[in-house]
Amino acid sequence: MKFLEKVKHTFSLSKKIMGLTALGICAGMYVSGSAHAEFSDFNKTQPGGAEVFYLYDRDIINGYPDGTFRPESDVKRGQAVVMLGRALNWDISQTNTSPFKDVPANNDDNRYIIEGAKRGIVSGYDDGTFRPYASLTRGQMSAILQRVYKYPTHFTIPFADVKSTHWAYSPIQALASNGVVTGYTDNTFKPQQYISRKHYSMMLARTLQPSFRPPMYMKVKAGTTKLNVYSQPNTTSTITGALYEKALVQITPTSTKGWVKINYKDITGYAPLSYLEYYRLKGLPLEKRVVVVDAGHGGTDSGAVYGSLVEKDINLKASYYLKTELEKRGATVYLSRPTDTFVTLNDRATFSSPRRADIFISIHANATASHTANGTETYYNDQLYEGDVNPYPEESKKLAYALQVQLDKLPTKNLGIKQNEFYVLRKNTVPAVLVELGFIDGRYDSKYLADSNFLRQSAVYMSEGVVNYFKSID
Image 1 (cartoon, rainbow, N blue to C red):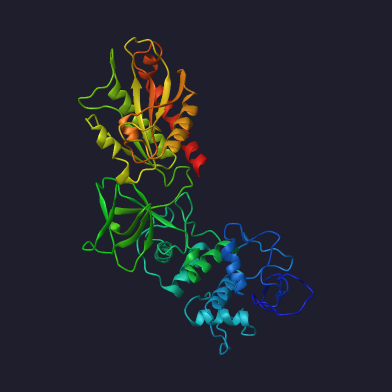
Image 2: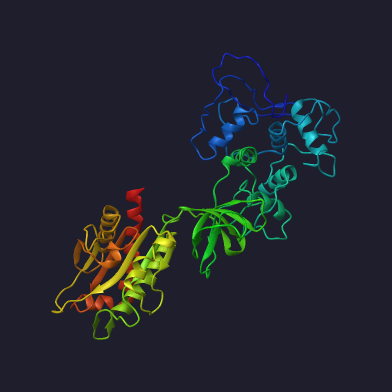
């Protein structure tokens, strides 16, 4: 029987059922039928399903006679070479002599293996065997694919378990920087792990059809003041936009060394790699979201003062806590006032636009002349004032509500959400809110605002409110 090739027989079956045969040991017969199979354990809508059926429809991969695909089963050395040979349409008509004593040239599957060796894609062992039943590792598979496709390495992707001294470092880097292979969320590649039928199918499909390659991302390096994006991969072409530190951008490799194509919100173009670093998505709820956190007052503007409490200091401390919590959830966060400096209201309101922020949150503490009020409240703007209104009134109100619902967990009194014409709200370019965490002169609130744990917990609740807000609009 054949190793992986379909044996074309006519059966009274309505589905194409796939099996695996190997060198005279039958694992199941291949049956042809309808153009699309529905496996009992795998379908097209599952991760990797589109790639598997892409190969299946082209007679590159098969399944088992019991109607299963067994996506997590290991790929064998022989199977991998046969699939590769089919995918590349290797001519095996003249392949009649085998260098391997366990792979006779007596069927097409074996001839693919022999042809692969002849092309220098695979090799055997010192004892003259090929061992077609041996499982293939992720590192070995990367080496095989790179020998065939010879991809250039555009940039380095850090894998904790693939150092530069690893034997498969170069092929893994070449394939990874072209989107053919990916690693795991723990920043490992697992080169010694046996590769499954599903994962090999995904890798092979990506070499044949680039649209299967997953998006790749990079972040602008910390400390980068401003990174221009150009219409062409050179600094003499037109500037199409600018990026700021830690901006998470989708990238596409280019043939121009040292440059990648950028796609960031409404900005497209090219940027130099030297200002970027690879970023692996972690599946966090706020990844790809950009938040501006605005610490109210600052510098010569102290805000409210009551005893030893100074509003500008409370606001700045709370803003850093909020930044930390948002970043834990994957957000890119920009502080409009990172230090104790004076920032104009206009500079605060216009800070969001060039950074392509999704939302704006201003942090404050309240005060009254009577020193009797207590409570937490969140403001939004949806009414015209002096010719201005926030361009996203409904979204701003939703954001205020989402934050206030979480802030209700604080020990302070819940004063709800309110409309106001604050300059930083109505002049902003994104959904914007202003949070009054408490009254600095309040009998109860003053104790809370002096407590770092209270500010830290406020940040946790606000960040959860941000997560819920984006869930509500997605």
